[in-house]
Image (tube, rainbow over all chains, first blue to last red; front, side, top):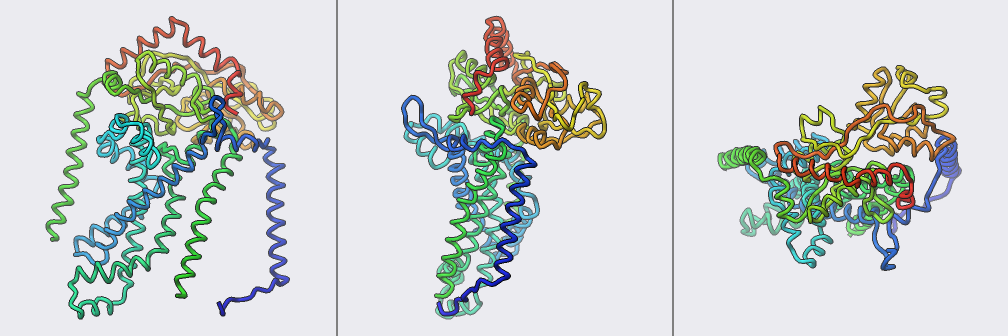
Length: 293
Length: 272
């Protein structure tokens, strides 16, 4: 790369680094004296994994289980939100008047209410009427152990499945509104010339859309979409209010039981960071790779 | 096309209403949860973490007074048990919308709650007690000392602790938290004067930080009955649970468990 800037470490940089280090150490030393907190970090690893006293095998504990649930939740919510958002985005960009109206109604409603309120409304009112009536838990309980294990790995066990599915839907509806706008923008951003060229080759409107416009759109929106996935991971913490056993909820349960407030909040923060930071780095790396091609 | 879309939207809303009314009808003439539990072979119990009523041990298993009670109930009914840990502020809506069959979660029987749900006879009595900050609440020794506008009291949101605190100390200011650990953290930092919570937790907490905290009022200043909560209109379930509790009282099971969880701290090594 020819245009890469070479950085010189100047006096100003030095001063900035020193100030930051000083601020951080003042912060921590002040916190130490102000909190007068009895740190007990040594018990934390145990909440990730512990050795079963009977079998001697290692088993996952609350924090690790919560971490996995957060990943599952985010993946499914993104998959569903992607389908929903793509549909709504296409409707919003190229649909008839009423289709655009429906898409706009969806996007503007969701984007203008707090996610917390949406999750609670959805869980107590909508999912009680529709999803709970399916009795997924009952169905799952009557399946063989293998099926239960597979579903347990992909989604959740019988005790949690109803709540998990409604949380996935609630998150998907929320994220779908943002994905919809990404897709709509992506489609509208394709130059008109592409349409005209396709028409002149004799493609119909739907063929053009499916084979010419959509593939280009997906290439354009891939990175914003990946960014939306990262936000979904962070947003998934809100479903702790409807008692989904994800990372934040497990952490709060653990705090309620052990009173290790700071150790656990800090651990949870680091876990979310571990999950999202490499993802965002990967996205920006790929973005750079593809942009100069 | 435009017309079709509007018709679809209207049809969707109408479907929603139909479902809503069907749900209402179902609530009035549904089968007893006792039958449902027997048929499905599992009882779903809603609970929230309250030390030492219910908490997770270091292996992620639920333990506590309430957990022992619920497990014994399931055993006597010959069914499996599933605990559904729920945020306390949302536990009654979750019960009403059928997310679980019964709340066995140290829920105090209060008239306001009773208007929304049915309670069994009490299986336990609890009371509110207090833990205060040594420096902030220095010299405080009665409820009256705390009942001043400059005093700040922390409690868990939506609990009877909140109600009791507001009733006994109407002049004080309140800080409400979703969890007890947050309220206690606030106390440890010295940002509130005291935390009100069900006994014995305040006392245990004062014992843990003797140089920082103290118990201003010995014993409890309220006494409240604790019952199972279930949806309204289920006489069979209410009758079954009431008689089960009566039995457990007369067998001494409840007393024995209460002594273990509330008067000893043998269980502490299980948690940390």
